[in-house]
Image (cartoon, rainbow, N blue to C red; front, side, top):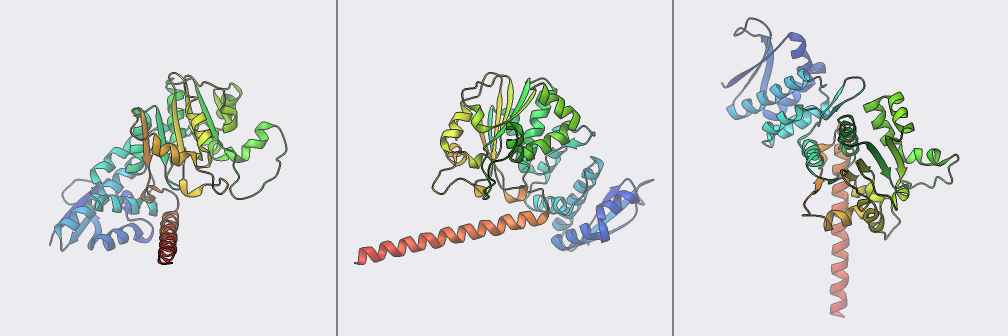
Amino acid sequence: MPEKIVTTQSGAVTSLIFGPCDENVKRIEEHFSVRISNGSNSSATDGDAIFVSGDRSDRVELAATVLQYLKRMLHDGDTLSEQSVEYVLSAVEAGEGEDLSSLKDAVCVTMKGKPIRPKTVGQKKYVDAIRKNTVTLGIGPAGTGKTFLAVAMAVDALRSKQVSRILLTRPAVEAGEKLGFLPGDLQNKIDPYLRPLYDALHEMLGAENFQRQLERATIEIAPLAYMRGRTLDDSFIILDEAQNTTTEQMKMFLTRLGMNSKAVVTGDPSQTDLPFGKKSGLGVAARILKGIDGISIHTFSDRDVVRHHLVQKIISAYDRYEKEKRGETARRAFSAKREEIQK
């Protein structure tokens, strides 16, 4: 019977790989139809071992590859969540095992010393696109790290003096609720719309450092309407929630780009809050800017979701619903046209 041995540094590491109540290895066993056990490694002087066996050598090999990568994730300081284990399983099954090795490089380090790394191959390609291009459009569902990784890249660029400031903006569009007139000055009014950007910057820089950078105008956070008429030189600019921009607003934003600047535009076309009949500037930009040198359009899939595992399933369910609804609309239109012709 085919067998592979995956060595670990200690029984403690093996325990982490197995997961609470052995949930991780149970999932691997079920997925690849193999058997996994642990014990002392007789072929080495120290450490522990995980034994993988099964009827098919190719499935045993794939299961061992998953275990090797989970071991490396622990070595790099990552935690093994249910979602991360599921992603590794699907990536190895899809033949992307070699691509997983590229995820060890950190984008930046938080104030607490935690490295920020891409968690999926799709996220790594997004980070690479930002590095190589002047303008990057990150399009995809919620939870794929579009905004968080863009902020991490901006902080890294600021720390390494590639740019002299970070500018973060998003359209002030309410998500289906009428909030009325908010009290306070401009900062108080726009804070609720920009809270996700604040959260990301707090994690990267720490609250005190972030506040200091705001006071020095090294970091600027403003609603999109305040971008008109400006030329943004030596800046890392992020436009978040871009699905809520109009075509005119998107054109205005993209033409603010100055010398030695980089722009990242993020958005989820399925969560547009524009009035009915208004075209999203993000969708138009993705179509008309395709193929222009220096501009990258990166599309995430639901496999890149790094939030709770249910988020991925929710997104998939809504995608199916939208496809069925479009299909039904097309069928009704076809039937109406046929009836009109018959008359």
